[in-house]
Length: 132
Image 1: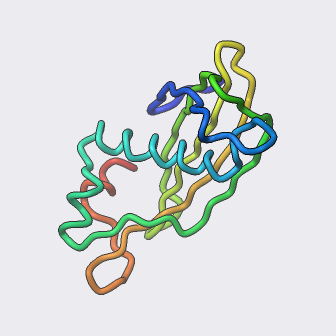
Image 2: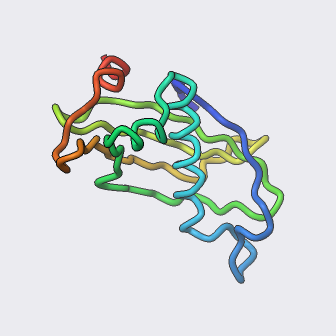
């Protein structure tokens, strides 16, 4: 595992599993979204406060590589890195590892931007500083 800006441990809940007894592939997006929101809160960026002020942080692309499945009761860790992709885009690089054996489960690259009240991309100052 590499060094991450932020990590969070979680556990699989029964209702997240499909008929095969493994985590449904769409649930992994919920896991990594939750970790992104927790990271932003930790660094002082309140996702819901931005929305109330007309700034919407949005995902414009999601790349997910599934490596191994999780099942009910499994514990796992999500690691996160954040980088500037361009003047108007940023990326979260996120990995999921099963615990305690640290087996790679998922690699994701989530590209986002911020849209102002007119629907145009505009990265807020606080977010810009975070990526420098």
